[in-house]
Amino acid sequence: MDEIQKTLLMQVADLHEVPAGAYNIRSNGESAGRRSTEHIEIVPKEDKPGIDIFIKPGTKKESVHIPVLMTQTGLKELVYNDFHIGEDCDVTIVAGCGIHNGGAQTSEHSGIHSFFIGKNAKVKYVEKHYGSGEGTGERVMNPETIVSMDEDSYMEMDTVQIRGVDSTDRVTRAKLGKGAQLVIREKLMTHGKQKATTNFYVDLDGEDSSTNVISRSVAKDSSEQVFYSHINGNNKCAGHSECDAIIMDNAVVRAIPEITANNIDASLIHEAAIGKIAGEQLIKLMTLGLTEAQAEEQIVNGFLK
Image 1 (cartoon, helix red, strand yellow):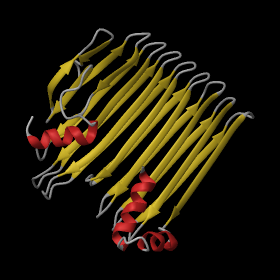
Image 2 (tube, rainbow, N blue to C red):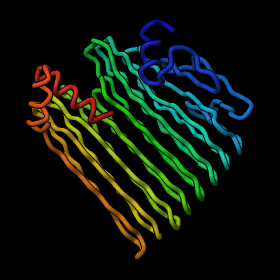
Image 3 (tube, helix red, strand yellow):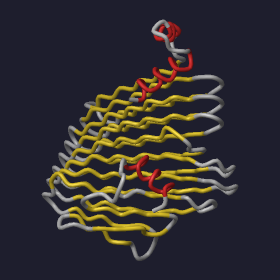
């Protein structure tokens, strides 16, 4: 890897070198390294770009890293990654995409990640997006996550995009079985003329299934954000959706939460709040010696932490 790719790898996967355990690194549309382990097998697809990840039942405290790095201007790709997680697992999956565009053409990565989570399995999924480069070409990322959860399984999703992505259309679709739990935490920041759209669709199909969808975002300059959250309570279940956004400068933020109860025992809540940074917060920090710009940065960093 060159220095730009190493920087991207650190930003999207917190890695300074090849990780221990199972991994698949994709660089400019091709495999740049792959390793399976005794309990985790990574197999390239034969009919389309992407990989299948098979995690054996009972696998505990192991991780999989599957970062995507793009430094070639004008490259556009669509990749399919399927995760087959056996029963009684407890694993961490780290994904993410970094695009460095130093040219004039649009660079775009679209990834469809499908999760099949077995009974009693526990999964933590971390996905980071990052863009860099001084070129005039756009950096576009369109991730789609599809989740199917068996009985009493648990999934925690942390998705982060805080810099350098010009356009993104983020979609998550999930179906939960009996007793399954899904927690989603999104952190998003846009600036300049960037645009970001988020769509969450969660079907609480199983008895005593539950979800908590939390989005925190900051919109600066003339950027635009749209947040959609759709939770369908199709059984005795509990669902909560929360969208908090800080709006600055000439930005635009829309929050459109939707909850639908299709069962008398469905308990669903949605919350949405959009506002500017409070003046008293700025004044308090400025009395400690910070400039207004430094105070704003401290508040934003704390909000997205």
